[in-house]
Image (tube, rainbow, N blue to C red; front, side, top):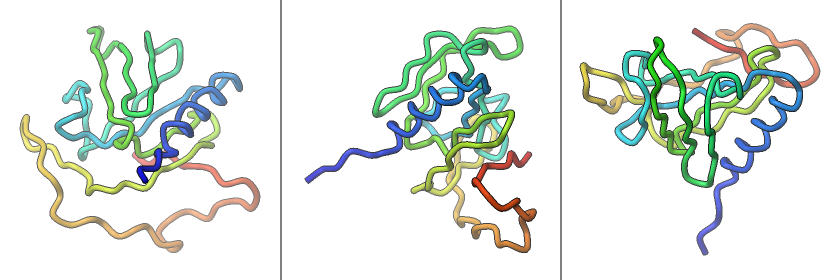
Length: 143
C-alpha cells in the first residue's frame, strides 16, 4: 500500500497559519537538479525563500510541487520546488514552524552543476546549539 506523505499537508497548513497570523512564511529548500530557483542565490546547496503573499505571485502547493513567481534582483523568475526538497517552513518573525527530515544528502553547488555531498553531517548536539527557552518549540534561522 502506497501511503501519502504528510509533508505537503503540513506545508499548506503552516503557510496558511503564518499568513493568517500576519507573519511572513519562509521556506528553506534543498536545491538539486529538479529544483528551479535562481542559482545565484543558492548557498551550500540550499536557498531560503520568502513566500509571503507580498513577495510571490500565483503560489501553488500540491502534493508534489511548490510553484510560484518571484522577483530576484529585479527580475521575475518561475520557481519550482519538489515538496520533498523543502527542509523547513517557518514564520520569519517568531521562528515558529516545522522542519522536515531530509531523505537525501544536501547538494553542493559546483559551478553550474549540482553535486551530491559524499558525507552527511551529524545532527547538532545540545552543546553546539543555543539553549532554547522552555515552552513551545521553534525554529531558529542559521545563516
